[in-house]
Length: 172
Length: 113
Image 1 (cartoon, rainbow over the protein chains, first blue to last red):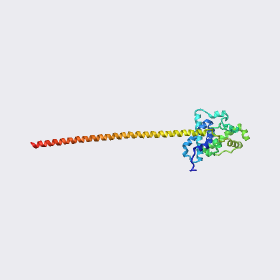
Image 2 (cartoon, helix red, strand yellow; image 1 turned 30 degrees about the vertical axis):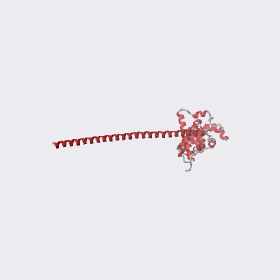
Image 3 (cartoon, each protein chain N blue to C red; image 1 turned 135 degrees about the vertical axis):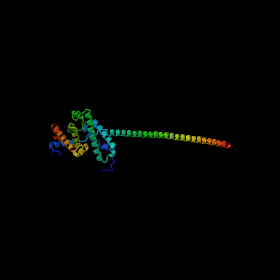
Image 4 (tube, rainbow over the protein chains, first blue to last red; image 1 turned 45 degrees about the vertical axis):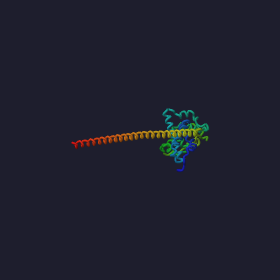
């Protein structure tokens, strides 16, 4: 752990805004909400910046808080009876970046149809490249639950992909 | 819990996820909005701090004034008590002197008999 490291808030925003926004967006499925979550997460970071000990700690802290805030936002939306993913599914991933490839958009679209805990585990696994134990620490879940969510999520995704994405996957 | 072995399609799917689930670029202006909100919050905090110290200073001033008033009142009371005591002492001295004179006159009167 680098004791001499002094956190620079602006630099941390520069470095991690894309990661925070992507996690929030893929978890909630709402661009506006994801942007709001990203802002709140960085403001929370500013408040806790004195306790951040290293760049790795900052990254871990940001992932953890982003996932927790996104889950809270989804819960709040569910309580209010809004299902963002239904709206998104109807658009077949149209909300995603226009620069993304057809396969990417289809994969994103399929991902949106997964239950939220499986989606969260898959996003951390494949977007962030985390190992199951790191995902468990980030989501504050037991390792077995994370492994099960990854496996079930992949199986579900595979079942959907077999009917919809085979031509893309084989074609890449 | 052990992960089950993967077949070709699953491996290809995983590969596709790794290749396609990349970080999205942050919306333009996100950093600017974060910095603006941070500045606004810092300014608000600073304002709250100033108001807090102003209130504290005002409270200290009021407490000091109240304390001063109580002390002044006590001093005045003590002074008045002291004055009253002095007056009683003077009255007693006068009464004592009058009694002494009366005693002297009575003694003279008794001797003259």
